[in-house]
Amino acid sequence: MPSPEEFARENIDKELDGCGWKIQRRSEINLTDIKAYIFPFPPTAEQTRVVAEAERRPTIVEEMRFVANLEVQRASPIRPAILNNAFAHHQ
Image (cartoon, rainbow, N blue to C red):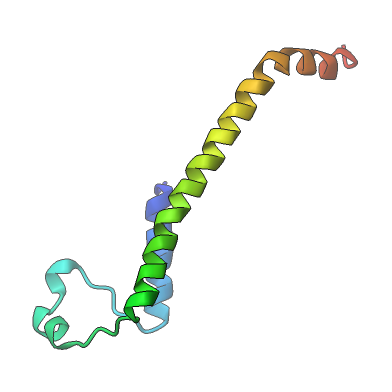
């Protein structure tokens, strides 16, 4: 059974292939073609905004992890009582 990453990669590759994209290994890439391609970049202000947003998101995730861990610690002492109460009626 493939790992979740392998499963996702296979499906992504199939979708891209279905859209007409050619999937290539790094060794198959023609560097001359890449060097001749003009890559459009957004204005500097937009690039700055994108970088700021990208840097902000992990901070939000870390804050959410911190709060979740606090809630788990806060609930740990009362967990046995809650489980005991929940299953006491089924004995």
